Length: 356
Image: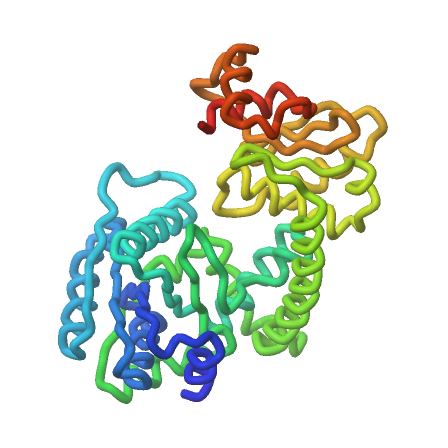
C-alpha cells in the first residue's frame, strides 16, 4: 500500500521500533499486519488492552495473541484492573487504554505508537467537534502524527477507506472482532457514524470531502502554531517548571487566534495537561484578561493573573500547598541569585520553592 510506504519514508521510520494498539477489530488487526507485510525488517510489537468491560474481552485478546503468534509478531496483553466506571464509560475507557499503552511504551523504550484511525474516524471526529461548537483547533481533528505524554502517535491511515482493512483480512482468510459498542447509539461517535451515509446521500458531503476540509484546516492551524511558537520562544519567559510571564501590552497586541493558541500551550505545559483546556473556557479567559481591571483566574491547574504590567501563568497547588515565608524564599535566592531584585508574584515564589 503506497500510502503506508510514503508515510514511513516521510517520517523516517524505516528502522524505528513501532508499537501498535490492536483491539482485534478489523482496523487495528489489519493495520499491524499491513506494516508487517510491507516492512518485515521493522521491529514491531502489538499491544492489546484487555479492559474487562465485555464478557468476551478476554477471548478477543487471546484471539489477537494467536494471530500475532501465527505471523511471528511480538504481542502483549495489557490488563485494565480495578473498579470499572458506570458513567462516561467510553471516555474513561479510552483514557485507561491510552495510559496502559503509554506506560508500556515508556517502560520498554518504544516511543512510536501506531493507531489505525481511518477516513471515517476523521470525518466522525470533525462532526463531533462541530456539534460541540469548537474552533479551528478542534475542527482540524486528528493529525497524522502528534505527541502525547512523550509518545508519538502515528496515524498513517487517516485518508484510507475502512473497507480496505476488511478486504485485506478477507484476502488473508482472517476473522476480526465486531465491537458491540459500535452499535450503541448512546455514544455520539456511533450516532455520527450512522449519520455519515445519510449526509452523503442527501447533501453529497462525503467522508472524503470532510477529510479534504480537515487537511485545509490543518494547514491553517500549522501556520498559526508556527507563528505562536516563534512568539513563545522570543517573548515568553519561563520560570523553571512553575510558570510563564509575558509583557501584558505585548499580549494585548496579539491576534485573537494567537492569544488562544499561546494561552492554551502555556497552560497545558505548566498545568501538566494531556489535552488543552476547552475552547469556551479559554475564550472566556481571554475576554476576562482584556478587561481593564481583571482579577486572577484559574484554569487547567494554573493561576492566571496580571501584575507589574505582565501576564503571569503560574502552576497551582491545590493540595499540600507550601506555606510561603520570606525565609524559604531567601534560601531559594541563595541557590538562585539571578532572581534577586526581580519582581516575582508570591504565588510563583511559592511554586518555585516547592519545585526544588
